[in-house]
Amino acid sequence: MNDKEIKNQKITLIEIKDLVFNVLKNQGCNEENANALANTITKAEEDGAVSHGLFRLPGYVASLQSGKVNGHASPKIKKVSPVILKCNADNGFASTAHEFSLPMLVDAAKTNGISVLSIKSCYHFAALWPETEYLAKQNLVGFACTAFKPSVAPAGAKEAFFGTNPISMAWPRSNNDPVVFDMATATMAKGEVMIAARDGHSLPDGVGLGENGEPSNDPKDILKGVLLPFGGYKGSAISMMVELFAAGLTGDVFSYEAQENDNNDGGPPSGGEFIMALNPEIIADSNWEKHCNDFFQKLLSIDGVRLPGSRRHKNRLGDQYRSINEELLLKVKSFL
Image (cartoon, rainbow, N blue to C red; front, side):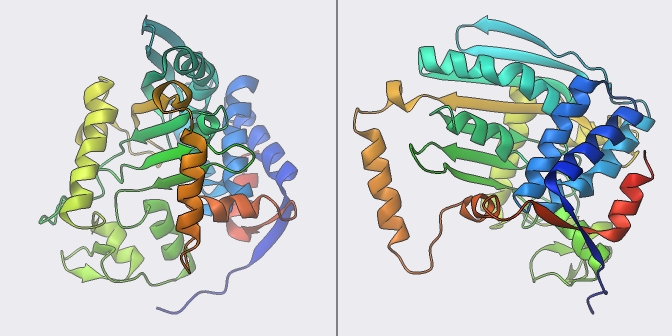
């Protein structure tokens, strides 16, 4: 495939946040919900995670326009035990549920060493690292996962059954950026495949199968077919684990049920999210921080190694301008 000529426009992160906030307000969100999601989208752009930044906004808008998402959501939190929290997101975006519930999760983990949060009836279309990194910055280990509509074939199959089912883990480090990974259990996040299709890029071998069920490097063909799990049976098993955590434990829908219930407006389906916080100050030995920092330094001494999340964190140190696809920017502004 030949790359298309891509025209970008530079705008500041402040302009991005204001644009997103105003679009969401114009499309039916109140200030609280609009601000929560604007923060999440701006963080993605700041970190260079373009597949989860402004690129997602048309989908968010579609879900507001169709009426399936509550732009005035007021999540309700129930503490069923000292370490178990349940959040009903009130059919709102996940970002709002996080702002309501994560501080309570932190308090529970600080006191008890571990805490778990299950979120139901939310619409999650963003990266997962904002919630796990938030926990790591509170000196906690964070873990999160969520399911989606089927787009990934289980190992050995050619039919979609799993969502891209991302997982994220963040590990705290005093006086340093936390170590954070956030990855789809598919070979590639679907948003990245969609951007490759938009921009005319071909994809590496092994990403997915085309409409005819055969391996393909064409992202448009793969979007009509299926993505594959990373690592074959290993990634497939982890994707199944995410389904069980994000649906089985939360009581919300599995990916195939999300597909059955969704109106296919182009936005995210309703579903659940599982988040866990661990307090190493209580769980680990007293020297845990030095021990782990020594581990990271040993790892970094190997030529070619970088810590997960370091590229995103480096992007934050640059200027405040971001290059945005002109067609996307025009589309976003049309929602004002």
